[in-house]
Length: 215
Image 1 (cartoon, rainbow, N blue to C red):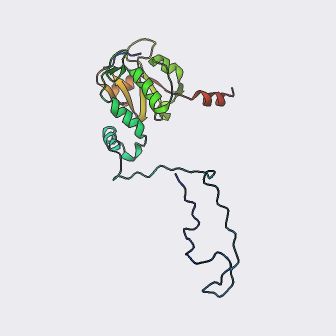
Image 2 (image 1 turned 135 degrees about the vertical axis):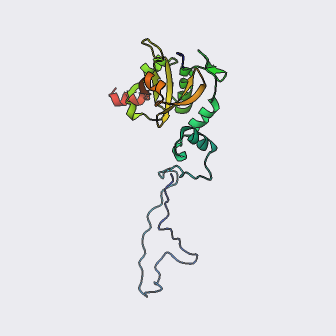
Image 3 (image 1 turned 180 degrees about the vertical axis):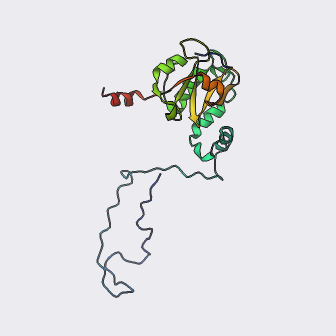
């Protein structure tokens, strides 16, 4: 089947505001007749120095990106789970690009050139050009702990070298450049891929790796 290849948090106070003409100084309480004391308002921080907490907007089916629906159908997953719009735009842009050994463009691409390009464009990670080089570059990841963006490696023929690589999406599905259909999404549950699966790897930023190793 496949030949080898190289939230913004609200800061309003109680939601009520003073009406025009109502003083913030001492005033007679209208209903009780008792005197109210001045209460010191907390200082409002400078907008430039105030912390910002940013949340993604909840999924709205009426405003959903068409690509979310398209790939939710292709992958048979809930549409709201496809949150990485840039990733799916990239996949859609490359979808069906024919396989070509040694190719690295949308005129023709091999598996490792496709993963190298995706990792660079979407995740800002520079990885080696060949499938074997990419495996050696990664930290091993257990099959049960796969996350979006992890690389998955296969041996589609006898030998010591890794011959195929793809990038994990979710629900056992991965995007790759196959020799038969070009850039597409396949499932690790398919017998062919399950039989030829070798390992999975995760690219760890060098600075993070250095900190975690104490260097």
